[in-house]
Length: 333
Image (cartoon, rainbow, N blue to C red; front, side, top):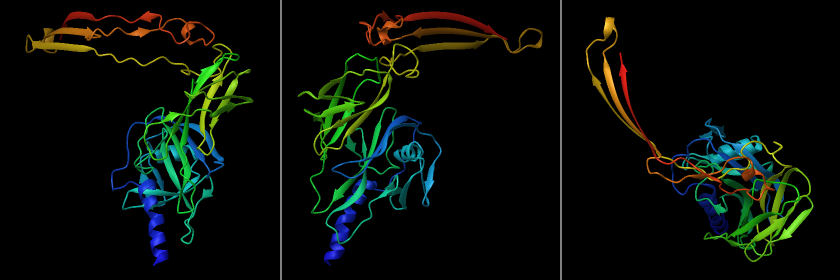
């Protein structure tokens, strides 16, 4: 009886964390560009897969007799690991139980009071759905690491999320922010005194979670954030000398714009047939409005706003067009 109850207790978090809590359709949506990272068990949390950027596809992920959308977390894991993960398909929940990633497996031991299982975190929060049921959006950060269940497990760790710019120039101080997400859920807090390090440079976060690093040479670097028993955070930054193209296109971008245009037209058939046997003669009256709500769009021109060493870096220096109205008459045959 003790063995059966211990087995049931250990399987409960697998059903709650590795799988959806109720049968549901797998996540589906448009492809997105996301970051995927895989860590081993704590307290060391060794890197099994460094932060890897992938763009999901609509092709389904199929293995172990199951199938789910390629735009889900399963699709991102499949691309980031090159398929180097194994799972057991649960037809009742329509999702996978992840068994191993990058060759690292955590088999359940019924006699143990300390069992590990793969958990999925999205943007610093543990997901309530499985890998097939977790939909992704561009910019999401996907993290897999083993969680522990049992009476001998250490306290659940918080998860660090590291935020910073995508690009910077050598010799220019760059600010990072470290946030600590509690394992129990809830809002994150600044990770004061967390260590932020990359390529021989390091800094300590202040009470607001801010740390400053200065890179001395160009290149693409992984930046890590650590703080005691917390799950480490990771980000990537491209250090480039001016706009030399080494960081690729769109590495420095301003805020997106939302614009609404409006069009109204009325067509009237003037004749049943046109001239010399052509199509019917039709008159179209048309009215169009661009930026119909007259939103004052702020934008930037020239290269100064995207040159890190410029005092105008990241600043608006121009305004978009105001509302424009135009009317037209069109005759077709």
